[in-house]
Image (cartoon, rainbow, N blue to C red; front, top):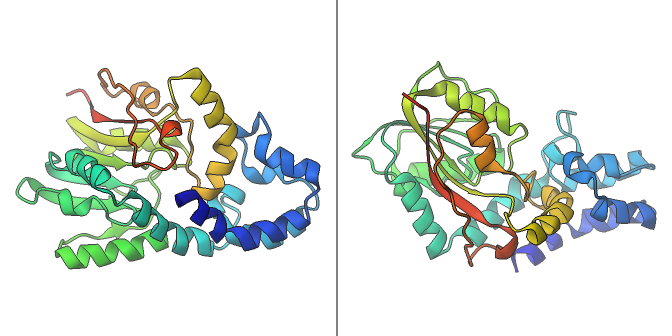
Length: 279
């Protein structure tokens, strides 16, 4: 149902766009084997002006035209935040979010705060301060409502995680909940997290990742161009644990899990745990 709603939300823009794209190129958009490292717009060959005119307003702007000045889309800023809240507000996922943040303590930063779904589960008795970053205007609008309802004193920094506006070694803990799949430059984000964490600080994470099953990984690679559009930049096939280790974090054994309440759960294996910056 989740994916049906997503495709319905984009139907108008997608149908109009397809009228102007030859069938051969539509196949490329969906199945191009080398597309996992390319933006979707590289697969939309001439007539590009018509494609951009009709298609761009309805898809994720950071996917179709990153850093090219297109306005944020109605889908990405209005429909997608609502869909996330509806599809991920299940008892199993709420339990995982609670487990993720209830042990966060001291000065805490959450990157990719989204609609604020983790906020009810923080333990105020051990959190000295909570800072959050989220670049999406639509997400921030919904997050502000829950911040006000729960009476937290939080300012949302409306920016991406690649350039955090904090001094070195500011935080004891950083939280990432279904965020590293969507950031534009994961190594840079992790480098920034490392920079703002104090020695001995922790990165608490709950992320879906590239499958360690070869057959499922093939399908993740095939579906990733579509996911990047309907998921507003989200990637199915990121080796997030490997990226954390490459950034210098100490990460123990992290078994992949399947959360049945995830849409298309078999292709969204996830990991959760705590990585540490050495003291």
